[in-house]
Length: 373
Image 1: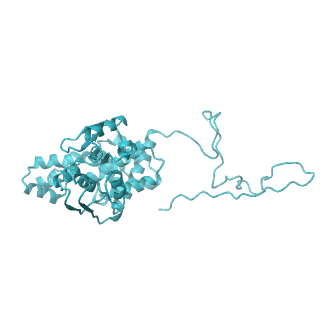
Image 2 (image 1 turned 180 degrees about the horizontal axis):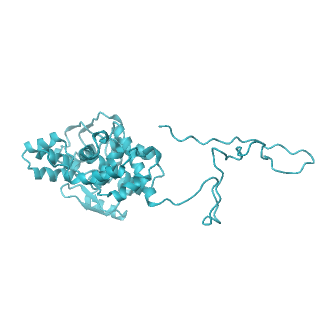
Image 3 (image 1 turned 45 degrees about the horizontal axis):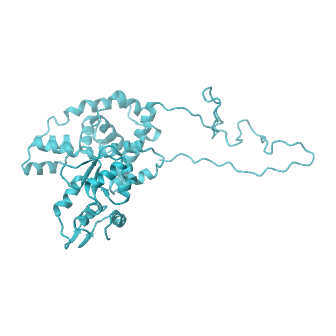
């Protein structure tokens, strides 16, 4: 779609010198012409400055701008539009979602951290529950919208976040033009989505019903049944992996033991609790990723952000210092660094990945962690 027309720049002219004996006056008088001719940067395509209201009296007025406070519904509509924009970007890109979101936020540098968090939570929520959301849209709206980002986000807000039609419909009625719905009765569609949430698995075979409700691929659900898991166990497993992961850190044992790292993080006002299974893990209680990245323990290579499952994989490999190890799916190198720490920075460790750009930060991370690369 064509974007907004860029602002035209008013040409700057050099004022002429007054003739000797003439009276000083405006060096740029109003040129003759029809009423409404463009003068001083405003005209038919750029409205003249609005008269300030009583509330703005005494405040410096910005030329040509009418300032007013947005209503909560308008703020929610702008937030919804931004989340849709991010989701469109993630679904269109053929690269990891975290890298895509990082590039997306570079285009929105002025976005507050709290809003960034809302965008990330919504987008990852859609990705985690996409199978269920698509099935819900098929049933309640029609198969033609099952992959449309706007509808996926609406289904997520209803099915996962539990929002009601009274809250969603006014937001959808205040969207910017690029996201306006063409459907005549959007309120009716939202109502059908709400009514279908609890009956989505009705009439489906048991395994398929569990797979749809928990957004598990059907082939994977059948594989779990073949491995001896009951339907209740599969359901609990699917619900567990559909929850947002906690912010988890892995200590670097080459730098310091876990309790010393906890103390250093506490001095940086980052409270943590030890992980249940990994002897190297710390779960952040009340802090954001940016707080962690700005802390001295992170800058000094004492901790890395890594989920507990990835930590356990490295610990289960248990490589010896004399081994030659290949990490064949290294990605950003988190498990590679954990393996190097287990090997006490000895032996040989080769990091491989089909996406070379994913490995570019590994050398910097290794130097920060005190590892040779």
